[in-house]
Image 1 (spheres, rainbow, N blue to C red):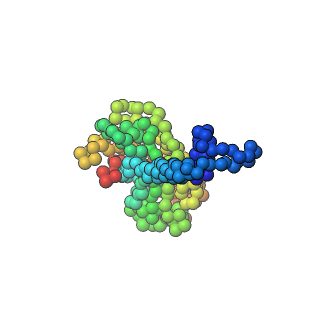
Image 2 (image 1 turned 45 degrees about the vertical axis):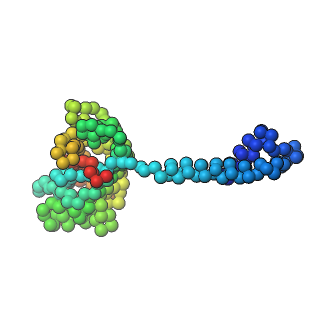
Amino acid sequence: MLKIVTKDILTRFKKAGFLNVTHQNKKKYQVNEWIWPWIGTIALSSILFVAHGYSQESALPHLAHQIVLEPGSKLWLTGDSTVHAYSSTATEIKFDMTIPQEKKSTGNALYEEIRAEKVKTLNVSISVTGLKSGKARLDRNMYKALKAEQHPEIVFHLRSYTVWSSTSDTSFFLVAQGELSIAGQTKPIELQTNVTSKKSLATGGLVQIEGNKELLMTDYGIKPPSFMGAIKTHDQVVINFDLLLSKNSNK
């Protein structure tokens, strides 16, 4: 940067007649002695100005709303077996979602920002051993099948999403594209969800996101668990989610 600034200054002084070229084919300049202090001052000022500009740019905050899960949010798996259906609920959910901060917002701002496709990041993970069915033996077999020791979390990462249609002023339908990692296998996944605006005295506005997705355990290298050799679970399971979101008031 110093060479660029100094070269630019010398060029300007040459045009002003303060520099004389002594050799036509070589970049050597004869400078009037009285002009050197001015060159030094201008060069230093230019460098400080450029550096100040870079420091200001790097210091700009990356403002974003942190979105949090509200009590009442649910995520659970359902499936069937040769004897009866079963359900397993996630008791530990990690949720990371950010939206660029807007200067002004009215009404349910979070709902409007999601509808305007402004979500910047979304990652959801659940603890495998946090899946609870109420039946200890079923849980143990599920953890083993999902390889909980080697891969303790099931993780969804959003890549993009598109709002397809609005069913009303307070509800719309969207399709999300992302990646789902289960038992060490990561596959692309498409989720179809319904988004609804809800009112809240505490936060000013809640957003409810509902949907479900059918999966085959074998697609993720998982052998459907069995019990005592006689009871076998079916390959297909369904991921269900009913999430309540709000903006973190501390951000």
